Length: 573
Image 1 (cartoon, rainbow, N blue to C red):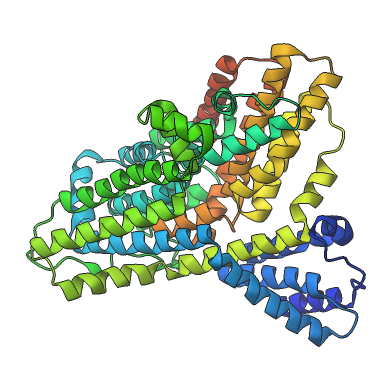
Image 2: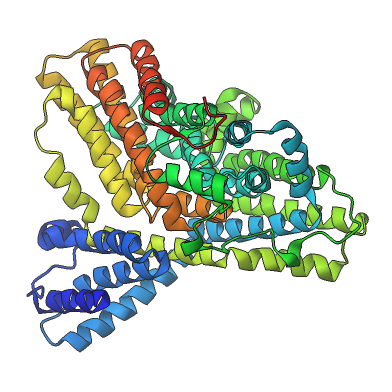
């Protein structure tokens, strides 16, 4: 019945007189109007109803391409054109060098994890941590701490920490939904705050270009970036929320039900939605009998991955530099400036793929040297790990294709147009934060949201500030506050979205059903987002210091967890 209603809705769209629509992308947001919201809306609603992300994304893409290709001739031509266009979008998504690098990176890390699992490395770490992480609280705190060590990339963070900590959290009956949440909440928020990461170069370029539009071409973009750090209210408060939740062992909303189910019934995942996605602990990859477990079988390959990635970021970034920046880097190659510029210019997708491939070879060599497996078994195990993440690659390709459709329709431009009209000074940072979260939620991408909003936010904040009498340092601080709202709103919306690539990776890395992860994380993300507004962006717009606002935000979060959150085990504080 539900699918029948979807078909009727699509059929209705086919009868709407769209034949006059222009093909100019810049005009589409005006011409299509509210119809630009249909693709993400259909995908998101279907994801929550059917709990099948692949089907939901597929339908969302088709609805978008159908709208673009509706003609006045007949419905069958429109359907055929939409199908062809959808196929082209998928091919185009994978043909993009960045996206292809991400897919290869994901698959290769999956292979590496399979090999080190076969060698017993993760199990040895789990046994080692189990002696230290004797409680659910300590296990979650260790997972939280590990997020700070892999600070340079959110994708690498999710893919590495999940398989390592999963055996530990499983032993202590921590719900997979909670593990996925801790990983997701320490991936993008930490990468977004790091002074050296795969995010920095992109964010700096957006900031610098936007300042050019207001007549300040010589602005120090990195200095602006650093100044925004105290205003990253959502990032900082989310990290605090994860820590307080672990310390108090209190949950609320759907996460409480999941935590109680896991601890009391032993069901680490919802029995109704059992997921074998990236389930590395299966019979094929279990170590052979008699194999002595060594933590170095996991630590060395992962350490190689991190070191090669860091060196690769520098070398790849230097090769992309030019002009005065390159000369400055060559003059002092190991300065903070040189490292920052190199990391910012590096192609993270390619570098991490190369690092993961090299780490895989190191892991295979270690296994062969210890006679844990033969070369044939090693390759077979690595390929099995790659296969385990093929579904992740499929979902990523579909998510990118949906983003391409929405870009063609002008979805983001339409949202900006209807939500960013004349706004009072004190409310603008909040509006920017909410607008960023809506766009990020709808598109599933933090990067895309930043690219859309930053060129609009800085000129808008500058104009609103001048109109309300701000000048000098006050105007500068006001603009910086709004820049922080863009960078955090993008991450907040990304955390809530079922089509977010980082959330997808966190689900897969934790062997958690994706929609279970989203439905449990959503409540926490919304709560922290509200605290970020009430205890952050609103009072900050009136000039209240972050030295007051951040402790206030932490206090509110702790009190809510302490008195509204429910303990699910007797040892809870």
